[in-house]
Amino acid sequence: MKKICCFFCLLLFSDRVFCWGFYMHEKINYHAVFLLPPQMMILFKPNIGFLSEHAVDPDKRRYILAAEGARHYLDIDHYGMYPFAAIPRDYKTALRKFSADTLQAYGIVPWWIQIMMGRLTKAFREKDKEAILKDAAELGHYIADAHVPLHICSNHNGQLTHQQGIHAFWESRVPELFAESDWDFFIGKALYIPDLSDFIWARILESAAAADTVLSCEKEISEHFRPDQKYAFEERKGKTVKQYSTAFATRYETRLNHMVERRMRASIFAVASCWYTAWVNAGQPPLDHLQHDSLTISEQKEYERLNLEWKKGIPLGRDCD
Image (cartoon, rainbow, N blue to C red):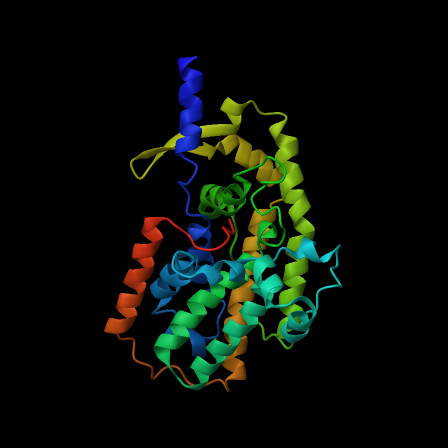
């Protein structure tokens, strides 16, 4: 009985351990840099550490801005059945049909990506190095989120099917176990996107179509694992945390036909292609003359504030994990 009580106490204790997807977001931005042409690589490669580290800033911003959460997801099933023809792809049309409150409540990630693309294009056009790097890093985050099936459905953490924790499992635990040792990130090169809206919505629909599989496979495999086999306890930053076991994660990723790897590769390609498209749309300005100097004092203070609020651990608005 004592062991059982300890087991459940640890389950409760570890509920908030993971900062979901930080590892995945950093790696996506990192690998995206190597898909760029030399004319862009000359700026992006020396700043690859910044682009990787600040890929997670939008998640941190959820702790200081209530409106931030909706930029990471879309509860697309609220609008009907696949292929969700009821929801206009154009933001202004969707706004007239559903109202700003409705769109904010159920997520705006496909439209926010287009807003961020506009910002990055402007930064390239103005040859503003700090804005280029900041907007590129954050754009990568939202694009990656759009590739996660559980970001594109209302059952975003399995809360409707008694599968709480599946979000971090798919988006953090599986990549952390297999990305470095087993996954292939030799993808090719970034391509120009002639119709950004069509490109983004195609990725959204791919994610929406995969959401049921993400959930059903976890439930199916769980029937063959006892709780002590499904979960493991590990030391992480001085704390004992509950994790899905390596054996369960391996079975799950195989049963998904390596979906997590495929969506991560697709994210890397999409991020690089969006960066490249923004640069082309800005007139392909030369980037070799931009100074690789450090952050300004105001920028440094902004990032320090993000880190401080994030560490407090109180997100504003709906939790999109």
